Length: 151
Image (tube, rainbow, N blue to C red; front, side):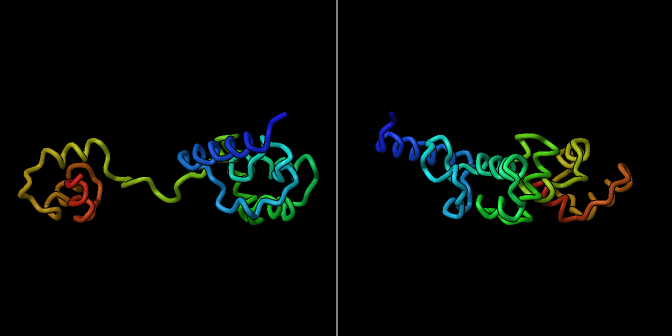
């Protein structure tokens, strides 16, 4: 049998590990599902991925409504559907949070970046924007070029 002290030490270690990996549940105190009440040391309300998975399972296998499953796992109904969609698209990887929005400039291809690196530093962003549009057919704002040159 595992002692209370051993469980506490394990939770502290798991918390640090989850925190480092960015996997802490944003509101573990809101998780009221029976699995996470402490009888089973495996289930930890701090572990966001586990809570999301169990939220889906509670709906699919236990027959809990979407609203009830979301509420007992510390999520909103809208968040439940985002989790379900992510899981449907990517499996377990879909339970990971991803950064929202674009991931950098879309038009700055490696070829255009090489062109900018080779360009004389005395040339303005506006001049280079015109040149890139003529050569590559890509319209870039002068500030995009200026920022790219400082990377």
